[in-house]
Length: 219
Picture (cartoon, rainbow, N blue to C red):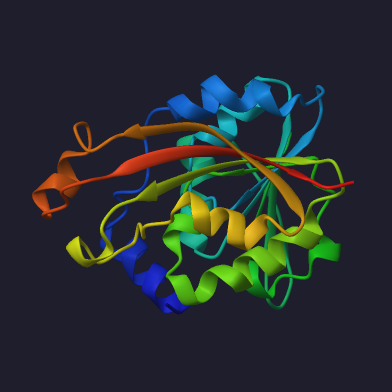
């Protein structure tokens, strides 16, 4: 899945993954991370999620990373924010108040260019990637997280043969395989979400589980 796939999705407006409301699991479980006021939350593959506004409203700073320029521009415009823009050859940084978004390819971005992350929030990044790309995602993300820092990770799991992602199915076992070497992994929630996910039922999915994981990097 190359960047052009996502650029085409944004151009055609095929962004069913975007939520107008703040994510309910984020609101319920973010306190579990134990973050201090002013902590910087990294949001990889952020799109134009409004969850970043909620995080700032709780007193946190946010660093988002998104490959599609339209998503970044739309986020600030739809949020009524005016961003300062710094452009480089392979990326651009948009900043407004306590939110900065890097328009960049996450897998190619040099982590040393980013402000230090105190935590990570992943609602739609890991599930957006096919299996062959997930190890690269985890390998890129791990050095961005300092020892002791937490990560709130949301995943979906369903019979893979029933629907072509994204979102792709990610089991809790795979979460442990990807991150268990450097993180303590705790499953905070696992629930049947198919009843409220009409668009997936219409595609023939017969079972879908949404899980919330709390990961904390080993010291």
